[in-house]
Image (cartoon, rainbow, N blue to C red; front, side, top):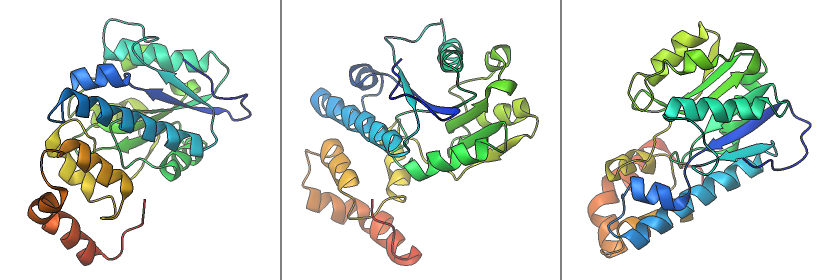
Length: 231
């Protein structure tokens, strides 16, 4: 785990994600290994840039530092490692929610000053963000969560005893099918989305792809909902 800078905040961000190489092997979304490697490199770079914009101290936990026999054990160890550095609150994020912004992380930090838990829900019953105070964290409770299922959010809510704040919904990005939902959160002119398209659909003409696949999902969505914010 790596500390970004000397901290004056009681809150730290924990990026809990695998390296480009491991993510690419576990989630072969693009149609070639090279493109998939570049895809996950871009996603990892984007989330790091997002975290740095918040100016909050941050740690990175990947396969080189994670300890435990399962996801819950590894996550618990990473969270405890941050608390052991003297932080009172931790905001855990992954690398598979391209719609995550520095504004959302900052909002999570603000809410965590008033609540012991903060959750960023995804559309599948999971979470893209978990904020927790050291005073309410219990490793044994975390081990009971059915991670990687659509029960995660509800189980976390039960664990929090209603002492939580829920943030806005975001889509995660673990399959090609998830990409349509992600598109709705970005401008048609987003350079980031265009670069993802070039990695995911490089075998097709981008002009043809946009005409065939995005006419309704992007243009229809944008015109019906008003001008989207540029990313």
